Length: 207
Image (cartoon, rainbow, N blue to C red; front, side, top):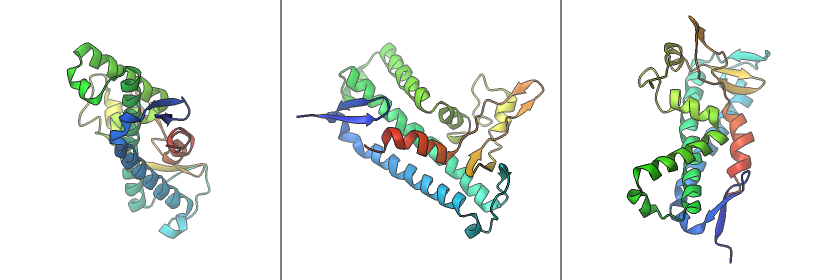
């Protein structure tokens, strides 16, 4: 009897089914990500229904203030949820590889906990590096409000400048890379629809 469940269909990660005592957390996050993707795709594919003309250029600013604000929130919610999803997959992989129970985590030494966090973060950065960075600088909190030691002033200012553009038919944020006085923002450009269709769907939707 196969008691293992595949949780990443690209890296072929499977874990013992006993770790799915909290499987609802993955399904909860998936439901939210599905909803945000579907709403974003519907709005971007049907601009006239929202009082916005069809875009004719390669990259155009979303001028409808309500839609711009709403879609910007979609990007924040999506980034936080997808990072949480991928992080949980990384945790399940670590527990399975090291034959640990959930209850063991509180008993681990600081060195082992640090190693666990490094391995989980390495997995996240192998799957969605740009989204993790964007989430750290914008989605979870604005860099200006809670800067890291290595955040420069341009990154901090850019964290407060979430503008939405339609690029080749896809809503995109942080299209233009901010530079000022020899410093550059590290906040990346990305698209909800591209990440969902090209990363999340192929890795996780068979779960």
